[in-house]
Image 1 (cartoon, rainbow, N blue to C red):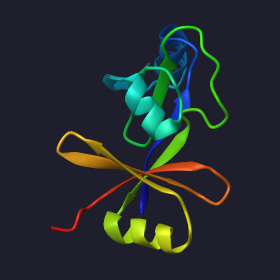
Image 2 (image 1 turned 45 degrees about the vertical axis):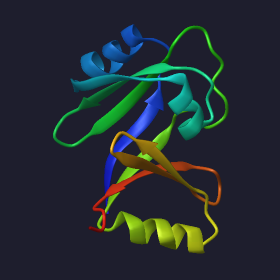
Image 3 (image 1 turned 90 degrees about the horizontal axis):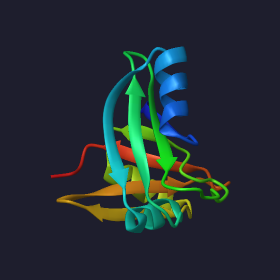
Image 4 (image 1 turned 120 degrees about the horizontal axis):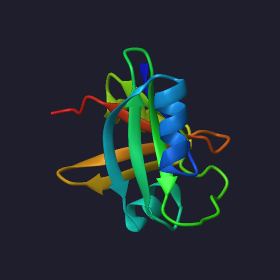
Length: 130
C-alpha cells in the first residue's frame, strides 16, 4: 500500500496557487470540476468545487476550492487516497470490520471511499479483479 495523494480544502484558487506552487514549489498537474451531485455522494457536501492536483516526484496534494461563499461541514473534502494491491479484497475486509464503504459509479468504473472507525475518509485505488 502507498499514499497516492492527500486532499485538502482551500478558500480560493489564488491562495492555492500562492501556497502550493509558490511556497511549496509543486507543479499544477491536473484540474477538474466536481459537480454538486458527485460532491454530495462522495463527501456529503452540497456544492460544486474546482479540484487541482499539485505535485512533484515525492508529494501529491489534491486541493478542493468550493464554488461561492460556503461553509464546509466537518470532514469537508479532506481525505487520504491509498493505492492497494487488490481493491476488492480491501473493500471486503473493510465491510467485514463493519466500516462504511462507498462504491460510487463514475464513467465506466467506480470510485471507492471508506470511512475508518473515527469517520476519517479514505479514497481507495487499486487493481480490479478481472
